[in-house]
Length: 216
Image (cartoon, rainbow, N blue to C red):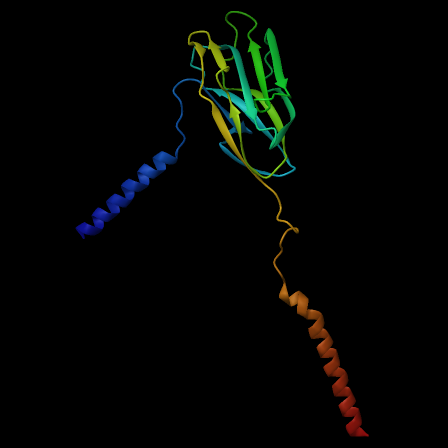
C-alpha cells in the first residue's frame, strides 16, 4: 500500500513540474512579442502561396511610466517569404513617425521597422499596444524565421529610460500539397457498385431466358 502511495506521489510531483515548465514565463518589466489577433505565437504553420499577418506588441509597461519613443526592426528571409503590406498598429498621434523598409540588401535579409517619438514630455503609451501589423506571402516550403529586434532596437520610457529588449524569434513551418495532388480515401463500394448492378441485370436476363426456354 505504501509503495502504491509513493508511486502516485511521484507521478503527481512530476506532473506539477511539467505543467509549470509548459506555462509561458511572463516578464516582470516591459516585453514585446509577435502575435496574431492579440495572442502570442512562437511557431506558425503556413501553406505555400498563402498570405499571413503578424502583429508586433509591446506589453507590461510599468504603472506610472510611459513609452515615449521606440525604434525597432523585423527581419525575415526574402527567399522564403515576401512582404505584402505593413502599417502602424495603433491610433495615437505621435510627433514623429516613420515606417522604414529596404527591399534590396546584399548582406541582410529583408526587413521593415517602425520609428516613433512622442509629441512631447509627459505623453506616450501607457497600455499594451499593437505597434506594427505586417502581412507576408509564403514563397517556398521549408522552415524559416521572422526575428523581432536586434542591436538597433530600443525603447525609451519616462522612468526606465532606454530599454533594449531581447530579440523575439517566430519559426514558420512552410508546407505545400503533395506532388500529384491531394490523396483522398477510396470508397470501394462506389467503385464496385456498377459491376454489381450489371451482374444483377445479366443474372435477371439469364433467368428470364431459361424460364422461357423451358416453357417452349
